[in-house]
Image (tube, helix red, strand yellow):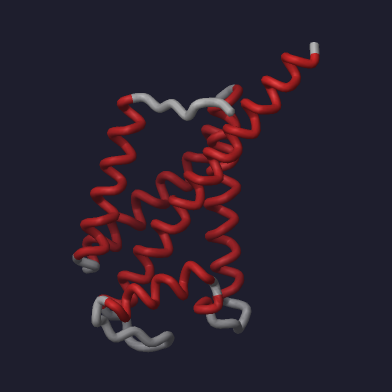
Length: 153
């Protein structure tokens, strides 16, 4: 199995994203919603560009990230607007349980409050986390395929 390696710059970005996510979850106000939404959308917009123009394992990572993150966002959006409650999604159910555990009053269709802002922040963070996991899996599969093809020749 290929060893997962990362650079100090990648570690910096991961820690910065984690810090922003934790701050947004700790105080879900309009400012943090706009920060997380803007940062998340910038990432989701530029990830397909990385998938198109990078090469080899990095390309596989960005393609996996884009597929997983955009797939989750599209699935959530379609599910939410198809007449079904998005609370049926496991990620949304987990977020609602987390919101209720924090003592915030959450109800679908109610006036936006801190609970709704926290749900929005959480959904964006879920998409980025699932994208990251998708990127790691895609990179792993690419490296494994390359090693198998080099051993076969």
